[in-house]
Image (cartoon, each protein chain N blue to C red):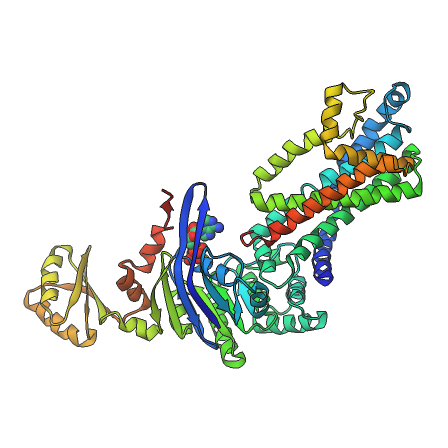
Amino acid sequence: MIKARGLARRFSARGRTVEAVKGVDIDVAEGELVGFLGPNGAGKTTTLRMLTTLLRPTAGEATVGGCDLLADPLGVRQRIGYVAQGGGTAPECKVGEEMELQGRLYGLSKAEAHRRGAELAEQLDLAGLGQRLTKTLSGGQRRRLDIALGLIHDPKLVFFDEPTTGLDPQSRANLWEHIRRLRAEHGVTLFLTTHYLDEADALCDRILVIDSGRIVAEGSPDALKARVSGDGVEIGLEPDSVTAAAEVVTALDGAHDVSVVDGTVRFRVPRGDTAMPELLRALDAKDIPMLSMQVHRPTLDDVFLTLTGRTLRDAEEGGEVATDAA
Amino acid sequence: MPRDVWLIFRRDLVLSLRNPAWIFIQIMQPLLYLVLFGPLMEKMVANTPGFPPGDVWQIFTPALIVMIALFGSSFVGFGLLADYRNGVIERLRVTPVSRVALLLGKVLLNALQALVQAILLITLAVLAFDLRAPVGGVVLGLVIVALLSVTMASASYALALTLKSEEAFPALLNAVLLPVLLLSGILLPITTGLAPSWLYTISRINPFTHVVEAERASFRGEFTMDALFTGSVVLLALAALAVFWGTRTFRRENA
Ligand SMILES: Nc1ncnc2c1ncn2[C@@H]1O[C@H](COP(=O)(O)OP(=O)(O)OP(=O)(O)O)[C@@H](O)[C@H]1O
Ligand SMILES: [Mg+2]
């Protein structure tokens, strides 16, 4: 459904050039649910806007829904649904009016637009809000309205840009359910961006990890997690015994990636559960008291760390990646 | 295409009817000129040589309805900037709707708004100040106003989407509109009898001068080639340019 080669986009504003997307290849098969994972400013929205004909790529080519992006943008538009990160409803418009307009712009008749609108309102918990001005909706309701608008014409290929941002856990779970159903019952192909690791993990067949405009990894959540060798272990200690504990840990069979932060020692071992008793005995033998201990299975956060040397959270705090024009 | 134009037109119509204050807010300035400035001119026009033919209301009313289109339709880009910030523009641009329809639907509503205001103003001038103008001339005058409104609104949308700045947009408009207003002889006609020759020359270069003159001619019922030709050609050319600019801006991939 999507095939992109070398897609790139550069922004220039006031003498500064930002290489937002630096040549990405994307392949999405029919019926797939693919996640696009990356920190703020990684280039997710920019890539989506290129794939949805909103932004002209500075390089590269793509076919979306069987139509060439550059040669037949109208064909692409007719085949896709898109929900932007920031939504797109006019504050002074009524919910029902927005649904009707959206449906009719996609060529539905008035009656069809109303029928689809009512159906989606039911499924997305928006029933009874038809006469409300969109500015009076809660953030979550407005987000669900954005999603309904993107689905009004029953597209076979849908792009969601951070669909669950701003939703409470209940609505989020609900939307996940809805997304899974779209695929299961209607065979819809979905491409969604997120910076929630749990979301990508729970929802997607396949994940593309993007960082600073480049795809740095690709695979199923499990395959990606398998690239991180072993479980992560974190032990908390008295500050003066940290160094001694780190030595014990380093001597432990199979332990690697040992790091010391404040009062904690972190490392990875192939099997966290079996390594623990051994570690406890070794620490005991040296009389090093342990305050806390955590073992966790590899997460996508670890994947990101392994791939980029930064945690997803660090990457977000680092902010935008920009280069000054020479 | 016509269906898309209608859909966009109707959406904007519904929104503007939801807040009908615009009819009065936008018409306030020309209305004040008519009521507070017009009577002042009555004796002046009668006693000073150099004014165009006709009485003060035949000179002043058509100029003020040009002013409605000129000012009322120039600031519509503001609304578009709001839509842009809200993501509405992107939402519409990702649908198959034709880009020309996105512009035309909006622009046609702006023309309708200008017409409503112009009719209000003319009615007031007829009732309160005894304006006398042939029906045919008034109708032609309204056509001119509608076309001018289409021109100004298209240019306004194009400019707003190009600048994408709520500060720069009105600043630039004000900088352009004030000289245009003064130089087109809307308040005081710029004729050879009244103006020094350098001012007269500059005013001839201002395309809106010719539009104002055509409007005055049609209110006098003077449907001759001589009186209407330049104004009509100038207006049609301006309208074509503005609509072209507007659609190009809507079409451009990164609007
Ligand atoms: N119109 C634009 N003009 C200039 N720079 C832009 C523009 N749009 C995006 N950028 C820059 O391109 C980079 C990528 O932005 P993009 O919005 O694609 O990130 P993202 O992955 O969607 O981030 P987020 O998770 O915050 O939504 C950023 O550095 C951003 O500042
Ligand atoms: Mg984004």
